[in-house]
Length: 636
Ligand code: 6R9
Image 1 (cartoon, rainbow, N blue to C red):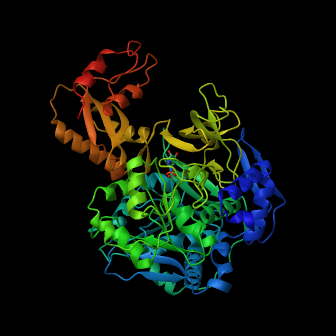
Image 2: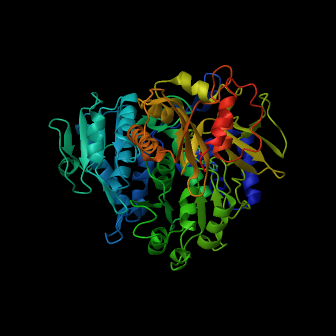
Image 3: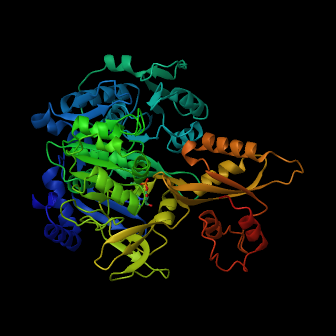
């Protein structure tokens, strides 16, 4: 069908206009022709952004793994589904065919069933980037259990919070993980987390590193012996289109992480459709997304989107710098990767290294390059375009969010002209709006405002687990009848979108969303700390890094500031993870506050960014004198 695979700009516009004129018809046609449903829907869409409530394909039943696996068996049984590239280049890559993947998923699903998991139960997955991670995700989906994958770089405290928030009874983890030259004892982190998770009855452990672990009697079980004894056929549990498929946590600007809930039917249709179009995926391609499955990018564009299309999807366990900075390019050459999807922070890190690392590899297989996670700066864009794409492969700058489930604004390669730093045009079915400060939509071009979406799309998250009020307050209350993204954007003279960055207290560091509040909470736990405020400042590689302004309690005792800095960063590492560590810590006499007691982050942001020419009016502050003191002692 023509509107599944867009081939030129004219066609894009035709499809786009159709998708906006009649969204229900548009998505119904796609859902009908390209997926396997056990039963078709009674109603394509019902929605109300004030409640908010969105339902796609109501009444339909399906199992997403039948779409990712079973239906490919007739034509693609021996095609590689997952191409696993280990951390150590000396270890062999694994080509897992659709037939084998189908079997391994079924086997793991049977183990989960034996352990008592049933439809609707939450299962926490804390695994490195090894095949078992994708298999565990799909095994949950097979039996209708809701997976909650927690990125295996999160600390024990962060893991425990996520396990408890959605009340997981089963955890799947590994003994350890390999990352570059390091071996990390993940099991130890899980043990610590589970001390504060009384609800967890079963912890299934995958053996990866062979490192020493302690197994807690009655709770911890090695997975492999269970797999060896399980049946390799597993009947899929039939799910309603609106049954939850997974929960994935994302940072908010305040409070605890938000467990975004995605449902089955709409998520499947949208991720498969967007995957095929944004990457112009063709049958013999080898597609590689370097994200971790612990993030939404990995869920949608390593696992579900590619597998729904019968694609070969690469899973890489390691890091771009090991054994040296040519690792990515060596893998591209080795497996003849055709689509390569990564984050600006990785591009910037690689661009800093000797060009030789890129140039010594044959990258001619590449047809499409992608970026995601944060705004890409012009320099990084050009480096990617010149040295990886050889000016010959379009770059898709894909803007989207954990909450949106799939890519929202992106060029269609070989159709949409690309412009550095522009995500360009909305995908079919996506209706963006830019809002001004008075809550009015800004029509026409050459405008800049807050980015909202005014009509539901199939993969929008349906709620925050256990807190629908927070879902409404966060996304649907800033602007009437709109989904508010938290980002700012500009629409240029021809209608292309450029994302300008977050307009709330979320800071994106190396592509990871970090809320300021949880980091400040961690810092404030330190007995010497009175108060703290975190802001982002531009960083060559990470995009943003964190700058902390910290006031200490007046105890009369003189603490060594370097030791304090170390202790504070250790606290952050323990509570959240090393990704949230502060690059700079300035001890201050006070924090600038408004008369209502709110910290004026705007001023702190400017000082951290060395943009001190115009701090704006500080005279209305409660304590204007602290500003000069902070300026005098600002860190270079
Ligand atoms: C997919 C993902 C979402 C936030 C989002 C925005 C930023 C993502 C971007 C981008 C500019 C892009 N973001 N892609 N900003 N250009 N191409 O990253 O999800 O981790 O939830 O982050 O990331 O600020 O609001 P998530």
